[in-house]
Length: 380
Image (cartoon, rainbow, N blue to C red; front, side, top):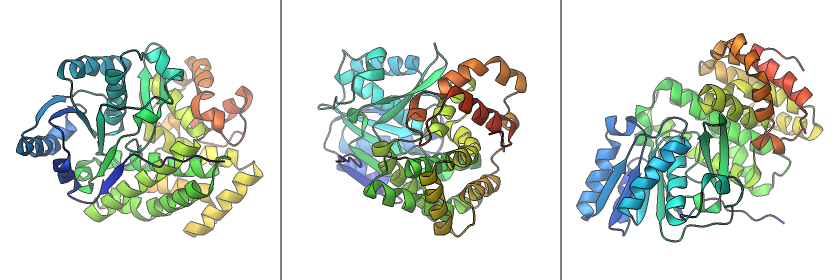
C-alpha cells in the first residue's frame, strides 16, 4: 500500500503568475528571501506592490545564504515572532524557501527545536500559517516537498529535515522570475532537478505515479535544459521550472540515493552548491548502482526513451554542455583538503539519502565511489 502526497493545495504556473498573490485573503504577510538577487531583479518590489494594492501589512526578512544555517533560521524566527503574520511568502532559491519552511513551523510550534526537528516532526502540520513558495531557481522543487535542508555548522553537515508541515500550501512557478539566473545557476539547479528525477526513478520504492512523473521530468529536462542554459529564453526557462517541480512531486514520496548523501556531506564541509555536487557525482553513482540488475534495466529503458545508447554517458555529455566540472578535484577541492577531511566525509556520506540507495553501501564501497568522483575516473 502506498500513500501519496504530491503537493500542497495548489500550483499556479506560467509567466506572470506572481500576480496570483493578489487573490490571497490575508492582511499580514511575512516575506522571507535571500541576500540580494530578488531585490535586484525587482521581484520583491513587485510583491510589495501587490500587497500594497490589497492594503495588507508586510515585513521583509532577508539575508538567507546559499546554505541556510540554524543561526539564520533563529534570526528569522525572532523577526516573525515579533510580527505575527497570517501568511509567509518564501521567495528565492531553494535555500530561502527551506529556511522559510522551518521558520514558519517553529513560529507555530514554539516547542520545536533543532534536535526535535531532526527526528520527531514528520506528522506535525501547520494550522495557522499559510505558506506560499515562489522559487526563483529551477532545481530543488522545495516548493512542493516535505523536506527542508539545513546546515548544522557545529557538525559541518547539511541535514534534510522532514515534515508534512513543510509542504507549502501554494506554489507559484513564474518563469519570468528565473530570467535573471546566472548561467552557472541555471546549469547547477537544472542538474539538481535531473538528479532528483533519476535517483527517484532507480529507487526500489518507486511506484506507478512517481515513475510516470520521473520519466516525464527526465525527458523534459533533456529537451529544455540545454536551451535554458545557452539561450535563456522564457519558454525554455518556464519549461525547466515546471519539470523540476514535477521531479519534486515524485521524489518526496519515494526518496533519493547516495548521490544526495555524498552531496550533503561535501556541501556541509566545503560549501559548494548542492546542484553542482549532484551533477559531478551523478554519472559515477549511476555506473556504480547499475550493478543492481533492476537499476541496470531501468537505465537501459531511460536510454531508449531519450534516444541514446548509454544513460550515464548521456548525463556526462549533458554536464559537458552545461560546463560542469568532471570531478570534485577539477571543481576546486584540493587533494590535501580531500585527504585531510576524508574520515568525516566518508562517515557523513553514509547518512541521509544513502540509506535508501538501491545498492546497500558499506564504507569500503563508498570509499571507492568517493575516490572515483574526486579523481574523475572509475575506481570501483
